[in-house]
Length: 361
Ligand code: MG
Image 1 (cartoon, helix red, strand yellow):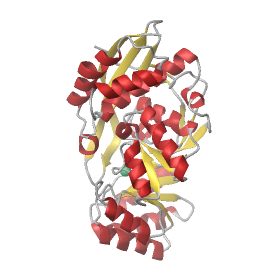
Image 2 (cartoon, helix red, strand yellow):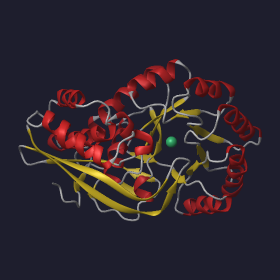
Image 3 (cartoon, helix red, strand yellow):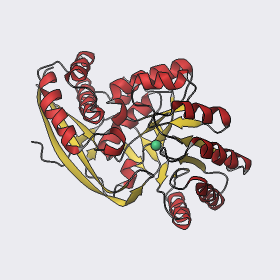
């Protein structure tokens, strides 16, 4: 089943409220979308956000990588020979993981649609339902407490608290949220590389001493500082999750071998798509290291691709797939069912999205 057409477009969706981390503030999802058509007329869709501060990918670089390098390399290839198509894509250009993720998920979507099965079943079919956390943006303590309580009202039971801007001052922030939400809500803390090693150990140990019961602490220090990550991981009881430190399957292997984290955060925009993410799942399974599936500021299209992989693999035990719930509208037709914190897989083939409102050129 030959690939006969590959087109790109842009999609913009306002966020319900600004998204603030230690690295950036964003008010709108502005993503690149890709449509791949097979010779039988079936289409697959993919999406990539330009997350320059994390992946280095911009709108221009994503469009250029897809249109000038990847598309010419895979046009005419057989989409049912998926491994071979992925090899062609990988050889066509170095890096550019967001562009590759968009094309990769469009290929998997098309592959699933041609085979007539939902992607999560074709990839392993471990579960049909996923519970995601929701992100609480970094801000004044009172605002973060109010946002946390609002999330509880919407049915969320797992909160991911963004910190990392103020070192030790993050501690009362987290304590105030724990006090407000009570003991039954799972709290995850994401420092987005914003702490140093001694502060990380002090803050996390203090959270343990205060009995704040934190599910995990994500990327306390800079991505490249695996020695620091290992020191922290060894010094505290709270599980440490590597996010910005892990892009590729080789990164995952290195983190595990060096004991630089307890958990790994997989994001399709870091791996370059599902094909590479599956390799991380394989490595993590061998070592018994559980994974979280995360997302950038992606809308329902890309997050649904991530949801399919999460549903497929038992080693992915946590989901941080709140992109669609941060958006103020859902412009897509089809896909899994999003019901507050619960994402339910259904029997729609591929990723399940059947229409993307965008001018593909
Ligand atoms: Mg993170």
